[in-house]
Image (tube, rainbow, N blue to C red; front, side, top):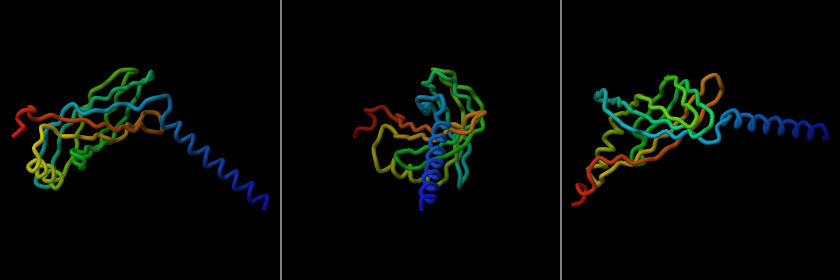
Amino acid sequence: MHNRVRLLSRLFAVILLTVLLGACATLGPYKEPPRVSLTSIQPKEMSLLEQRYGLQLRILNPNDTAIPLEGLSYSLEINDREFAYGVSRQSVSIPAYGEALLDVDVVSNLLNVLRQVQEMGTEQRSSLKYRLSGKLNLTSRVGSLPFDYQGELNYLPADAAAP
């Protein structure tokens, strides 16, 4: 019985150490997560079942250490609904206390676009709420930095939306 308790306590310690090391490997020298925001969205290719948009992302590094990226994955929600998603293999280093602009693509499907158009037709809005989330994959390291940013895109003057 004593050996079983000892074995279980060792197993628990190994699991705890693995979890803690995994958390440290993900965060590394970065005290704060990067801020990734959407600066523009442009239609690129349209077909019946799939649409491709070009996004420009601004990545801000609030840390005192550069963030070396080898790629990223991301998704875009508009008005609390999934709209598009994408991945990029771009490599860039975001300097300490610096920023970078990245041009990436996202893919949407016809159903997501139709839902957005339907909602816009039933509501009078002058802006769209969006949420951009994903992860930045780091070079020469195992791990990634998650990001989650919410913002608003104005597409009409405020007085144009009023009846």
